[in-house]
Amino acid sequence: MRFEVWAQTDVGLKRDINQDAILVDHDSNLFIVADGMGGHKGGEVASALAVETVQEIIAKRRVEPKQSPRKVLSECYREASSRIHHKSTHESPDLMGMGTTMVLFWEFKGRIYIGNVGDSRCYVFIDQNMWQLTEDHSLINEQVRAGVISEEEAPHVVGRNVITRSVGFERDVMVDVLEREPTPGETYLLCSDGLSGLVTPERMLEIFLHTPIEDVVAKCIKEAKAAGGDDNISVIVIRPKNAG
Image (cartoon, rainbow, N blue to C red; front, top):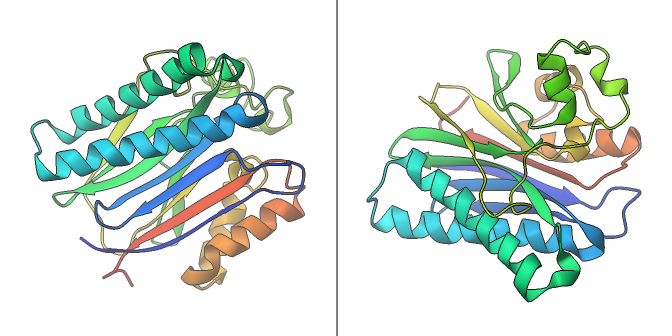
C-alpha cells in the first residue's frame, strides 16, 4: 500500500521550544507523533529518541520479519522506553524523569497497526464521520471510565494533561496495539494533545468535511493556535492513495 501524507509540527504560541517529534517514513509506511515531557530539554530528547528507535527496529523487521507485527511494536515501545530511561538515569542525570507519549501508524503486509502510549491520539475519518481509535492513558480518562466525572466535565477539570503511562519514564512500558483491515475511503489523523486538547473532535470533523485534504493539517494547527496555542502542536494526516 502507498499513502498520501501531510505532516507538520509547530511550537505553538506559549512554548519556547518544540518538544514534539514527528516521523514520515514512506519506505516502511510508518508515521509517528511523539509528545515529549521533562524539563527544558528532556522532552525534546525523549521524543526524538523514541521516534528514532522505532524507525530503526521497524526497518530491520521489514527486511527480516521474524515476529508478529504486534510483537514487533511491543518491542519498539519497550526498547524506546529502555533507551530513554537509561539516558536519563546513567548518561544525562540532568534529564531525569523525561518521557514521551507516542502514537504511530504502521502498514505491514496490507494490515494497519496503531500503537499508542500516552494521550497523543489517532482518529479515523470515513463516511462523513470521525472516530477516536486510541484510548488516552491519562488521569482524566481514568476518572471518566470510573464514573468520577462525565465526558462533558473532562475538558474543564484541572490536571487534564496528567498522563498515567509514558515511554521512558520507567524502563519498561506496555503499548496498546490496534489492528485494522483497511477500508476504502478512510483517512487517518495522528496528533499530539496540542491539537486534541484545544480543538474538539466535532470541529476536526468540520475541518475534514469542508477543507481540501491537503490543507487539513495547516487548518488544524491554525485552529489550535486560535484556541490559545498553549502547547506544541503536531498533526499527521494519512490517506491511502486510492482513496476518494
